[in-house]
Image (cartoon, rainbow, N blue to C red; front, side, top):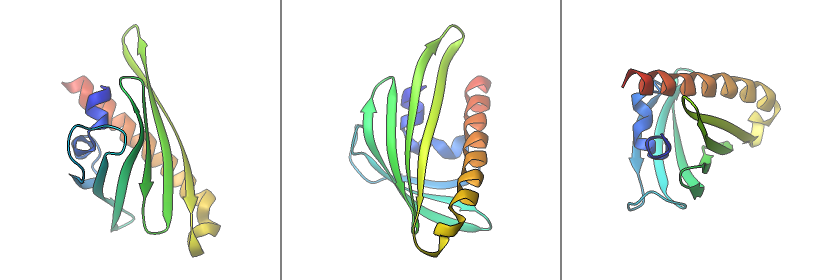
Length: 128
């Protein structure tokens, strides 16, 4: 599961909002790996760069996602569980400029989107 999630090029398979992902750095995927991605949100395309800031296979993956006015620092942890792997995520969102006043609203929207993304991952992996 870790390797599948760590390769951001897989995200369009389980996240219908993610329309394009391109690896910007050379393989192998590791700390410092960068991806350019496009996500469709609120009737528009959002360009972003995702950079892995920590890569401790198979337990921890941390990243910074940079968009025009937003930066997201996220951490995924993977723990063995009797019926598979338990993945947990946490993140911190920083909104710059005029959108800063909407930070709490953006954070709630982002949390709902993340829950939908990870539910999509679960469905995708369980479907084989």
